[in-house]
Image 1 (spheres, helix red, strand yellow):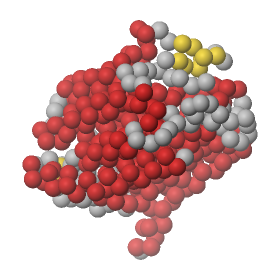
Image 2 (tube, helix red, strand yellow):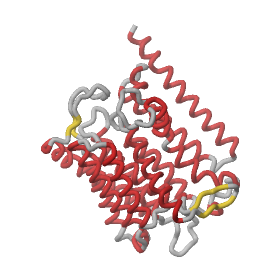
Image 3 (cartoon, one colour):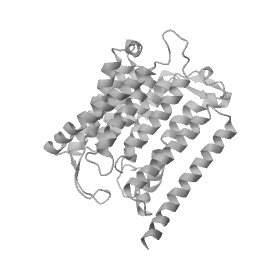
Image 4 (cartoon, helix red, strand yellow):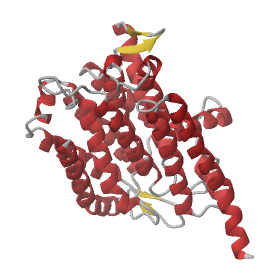
Length: 366
């Protein structure tokens, strides 16, 4: 655990220190988000924060390669593939932050980055189905891997609508998933399997988000831009695929039922992105096949429209994400009825706060 904590701190520190320099570059060379009708900011804000997070992730990988246990991860091509994929997708996002690429070009860049990772070994090789592990043929697993990466990157991109929203939600998601990955890995192997590629990615991802948030929380000094949203989505997808696609249900905590053991690796990744996934589904329903077309009807727009201040809306989204991800995670450690009760209670509290706080605020102003 100490090596993971070091990786997290290194990623946070490097990202935090690199962000002001990246902001200067964004201002100097014109990577600035203007005030548009669908945006919630009132002044132009520079964007390019994903470059700082990429530097933080790369720095944490460099440190990990020198540590006694995490250095073993670099004996396989998986992490190298993730690093190359991260570089490609951040580059595509950074170009978009300057000149706003069309949707087809961005989609092609995401496919290339996902393909690089897939051919480096980051593949959804197995899925739980029918109470057993099903091994996927090569003709299916590579396209499925690419699909998961593209779906996750776009889900995170959709969530990037309020200051600090995407970075905070991804940090919560990565932290919840890290707990599951770490506890589901048996420690009595040589080399110890608690030191795994997905656990490293998640620890570094939490650090990158934590280092960026002080600059990005409302009022934001710098937006992560597409460079950041696509990078965070790719790293979260890489960790999900690397773990879920090679998961052995026999390694779950002893309190988990067989059903939980088989389905949690799929349910948890879906739950940690439940809010952005819901936003994507609603956008598809609203816009049809051209779901990438921008509008001002995202969930975060609706939170503001019902009366939540900017920061309050972001904190409520954090709460929803933590309750859903934490509630699903509880199924691995406590009996199902207790986990369900805790999750239902948390969601009820979030619902009351979401609907009740604007009314309370209006009463105070009367």
